[in-house]
Length: 408
Length: 229
Figure 1 (cartoon, one colour):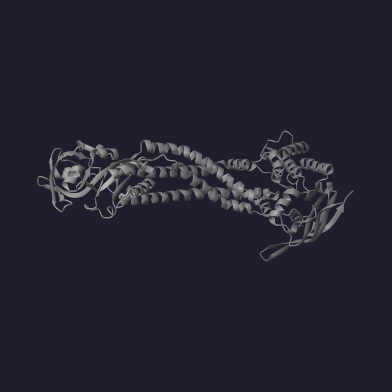
Figure 2: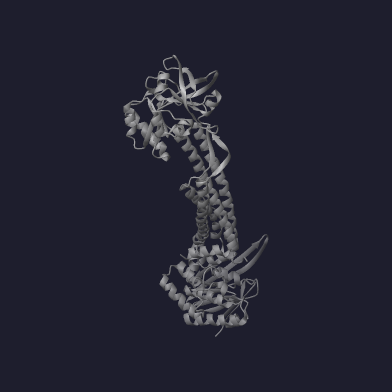
């Protein structure tokens, strides 16, 4: 244990230098932790917005629907299908939907809209769409020829709650779909980019309107654990295939919203570059300190080698010394980073303008306090310090006592 | 008497650019067990070079060195390191204690490298501390000791590992004459009491007077080899 004592006492010899190097590592740790925490937090928030406001954690479609959505790529949401999904332990709730495009009219004004048919009760269990109603009310449980419209649709058509909305589209039987609906509620505000041009109908109204005859385009799934989306979706896909629904496939939200997912992955890579810069600063700081220490102690190491200290022991002494500094700095860094992470997690920093990614808006920079926000900085700082210290440690291990003893 | 060191036709050449200096020219010498000998000579005579070669810190360009019957010149760097640890004690001019270790830890250090059990280490440290007159100072760091006290610790460190020979390079050079004299008395006493072999490299008249054998080097050769009573 003497080697640990020596390493620790060596740290205290040049206190100011050790302190500065330690501070570099502490600051590096905090920056690392914040980068990991805010990346996880912001993207976690965005994923939560996307999945809980709209997509769910996964969806079931006819095979190929996502590549080329079509009114005709529909399927029957049979009780057997729901029973199969209900048997999956990962699945918390499901809701069927219909999707199409239409033209919406109010008086002489018209606009193109994204038409979505939903089951109001089931939708409540999967998404938070009902919470986004700003004016009027959510759709009633039973079909009543009512519509929920996005804020932009309401503004363009000048359609307040209670207005008569005419929708024109194409039915699945080739006929022109044309019907009147009453505006029950208006969704979101001007800042909510996702709901702007959507019109929601009761699924039964939508099936009737589009002559879909009880068919749907998708079933959105909510899982108990959003962090296990991919394995859960794999299991759901296998289960529905095994139950005989071979023309259906289960896709995770990453496949449903590929543009958003790619943007998220690219931003995370950007975070990696940020971390690499911090890593380089830490590495240079550590290298400089340890190299200086080895140069200053050349004679001492020479004496130690002369009296029989093996090169391996000298090497270990220096690496242990650096490892101890990295460990202590990481502990302090983790302690201080906790405050910063807590602030971002509990309060966050509001963006001057909402950040819109792939049609979804983020208003606050937040952090997630996850184990990764601690173990990633620790591993990277600790391993970098150890790795970098090996260069001067090798130098010390190769010291020739006869030369070192001549040095001042 | 049994020879501890046998040096046979050892040469050492230093090259600096195009200049070559023959530091040692076919020096042959034996040191017997229990000797209290000194290598003397003016600067550049080769005494430090010879001491470095005897200690295995440097390699000769020619000739052989045997310590306790083992040819040091044939050993690898790693073997030499182990060999020094187990068979040679060092006393340096500048004491060269490990500054972050206390007196007892400095003394214990070589035994730790040798793998001596903890209890035995502690016993030997306590005993040698009493012998070198540093009882009660075991917890002090070298920085809190005088030069004489530091050199006593160095002697204790060299002695405690029970080496075949102690090589002392100008051990009194940094001490005042009284302290130097006391230290030399102590080493002489240890030599007499424990039969430890000492080989000094020195300019110090006092050591030359106390040495029972005085080997004088000049220009890389043994100029004289005088054995006293």
